[in-house]
Image 1 (cartoon, helix red, strand yellow):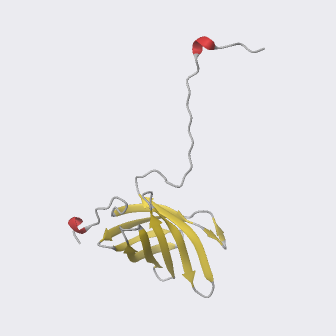
Image 2 (cartoon, rainbow, N blue to C red):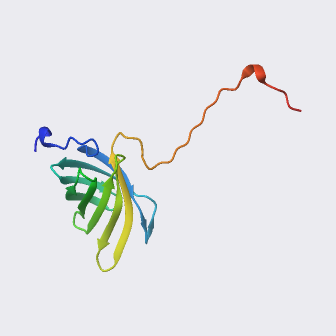
Image 3 (cartoon, rainbow, N blue to C red):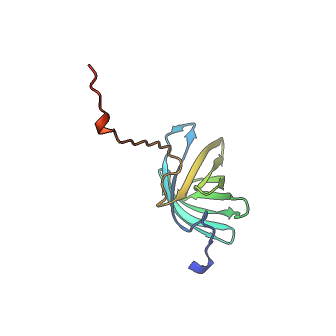
Length: 137
């Protein structure tokens, strides 16, 4: 695959991505993950790592509706099926492990270099009018 073959839709840039996943049983506080993904003619391929270990990703995406589906295979361990949606601020979705018990959770990934889209930030700034200061006793 050459750079000319990669997806041109800005929602699906090939390269480094980062993000987190959530899990409630057992409780884990947003473990971080990093990966390198290639988006090409409706397919996703990549590799990465997180606290569980290194993994590979193989799946599909749609530029028509932003839907994504992939299998995350932890090397020498288990598989995780993920499905999500890209609305322009990364891919949000759910993951599922179908093993002896079913584990589920959520995830959010986004291209490296973008601000953390899931962080809520509020900022306000104002200059005080120096000539109108009033002394309060």
